[in-house]
Length: 283
Image (cartoon, rainbow, N blue to C red; front, side, top):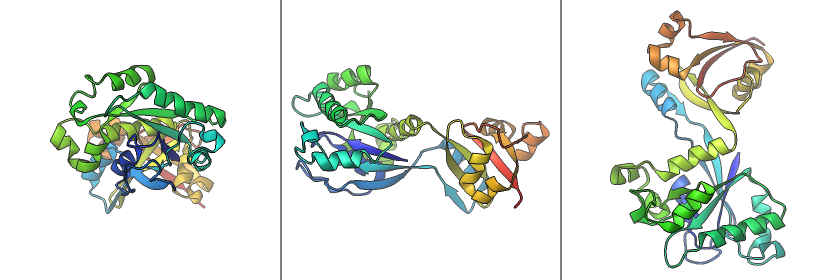
């Protein structure tokens, strides 16, 4: 799954992309410094994976991932080829959802006009994708999540926008929480992106590996098994399922099993977010 990051020139979308992916896309105060899309894979923050990793101390820990694409900025009349319009439109057609970065800092930002400009270009190009709005705000807005920033509050109230200070999150990375004492806006954005695409995670856990597997909400056990290997789906026998909540409640898988919380499910079982699953198969 790919999510495109878009915005008008110089709204801070490449800085946001850097902060998300640490991919180091060139950042310059020049309208089209991102001409070819930069692509980065990002781990989805998941405390369940971290908890299981501490419990099992496995050889490897693997989180679910999302692919983010930094797409070149566009201008009015991009659908007529203005600016980098043709490149922009070809790149945005390749993603599954869109993060629209809106400037809520500096002199006289006009977030509603910015939003209307990009949405109009997408409509002209007959592109209709799920979208998350991000208000890129000032460092002084971090502690109270932009409560005193009327530009951000407008798009938060109207569009459900997430507030992020791209410069601070890019500069401080994982130290951001320690410095500012609040959750990273990026973590909220990554989780929102995962939800936007209708994705959930199931978990496999043991001494060799703790791993989060990405599936669509509504997928069955046999589809989930096939994510590990096609043999798991082809030779599916059953799935032993334990909810993450019951694992935490009872402390170990064995104790949860003794309490009757480990279920035997067939191939038509609809997997739930956070299920810990062991597949039985034979080929």
